[in-house]
Image (cartoon, rainbow, N blue to C red; front, top):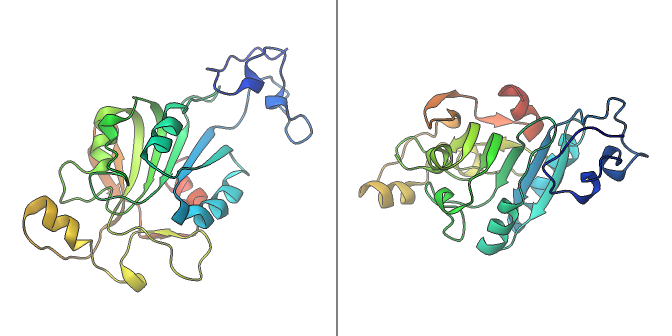
Length: 226
């Protein structure tokens, strides 16, 4: 009998007599408690290949579900399904187009249902832009119960020829922020070197820089202690 209670978004684990989410061939759980934290990996159609590569690596350490969303409504529905497991709140990866203050489709963090999240990776352009007070990282920190957030000060893109590389940088590995977004936010043109991937705490305070490039999301999570 599996004595572990889950918050119930997966049908296979609602029953106390269930075992390893109904997949005993590929999973084992001798104690009756899942030993791996859940990850929800949400991405758009342009990030599909990037997401597949990263999810393949993440599955070695986590229970991962990948969600290809096509519009704002689909994103919101997906967000509402986020739940944790016996290990606590899940990790959420958002690999999506954005401006510093909105996800594609005009999605604001405050417009999403409040969720408990262990670590949120915003693999978006300028989601952690240091010059924008109401950037996405701060929005998620104030609107949701998030332990820590990683977001880019600069463009987020995968270098041509790499496999699952995560970094904040400009075209061809250059060093230029999205000046258009800065114009919209401050009324003036600013172009400067990006500061890379930033770690933010649950109160929306920037803690430190965690680098410009990583070979995979799995490595990035290890760098921030997950």
